[in-house]
Amino acid sequence: MSEQSRKVTDLTCGGSAVLLWWFPVAALIAGANWPNFRLLLWIPALLVMGAACSVNATRCGRLHCYVTGPLFLLAAVYLLLWGFHVVPSPFGILSYCFVGTVLLARLAEIPLGKYRRRVCANQ
Image (cartoon, rainbow, N blue to C red):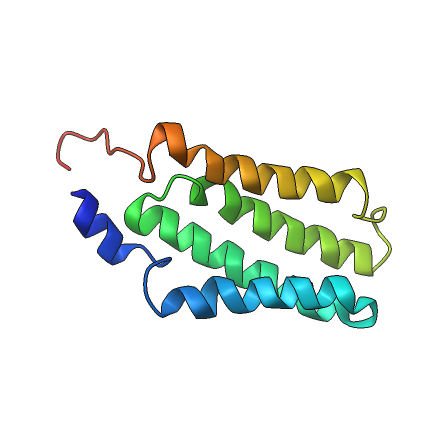
C-alpha cells in the first residue's frame, strides 16, 4: 500500500478527524475543568478515540494507533471502575503515565515513520 493510499484511508485526515478526535479531546479538556461531569465526558470520549484508533490501525497501519487505541480503551475501563470505587484514583502518577505514553507513541512516528510496513508477501 503506497503512502498516498494510506493517507486516503487514514481517519485522521479529513472531516472524520473532527468527530473522532477533536470533539473527544475537547470533552477531555472540559472534563478536566468540570469535575462533577468528568466521568460522563471522559469515558465516552476515550471509547470513541480508542475505537477510532483501533480501526485506524487496521485500516491504514498508522503506527501510534497500535498503542493509543488499546490505551484509550483501557483508560475508559479504568475510569469506569474508578467511578464504581473498585480501583484507586487515576489522578497523579497514572495520569502522567497515560499522557506520556500517548506522546511517546506520537513521537515514535518521527524516526519510525507514520505507517507500519506490511510484511506479508501478498500485500
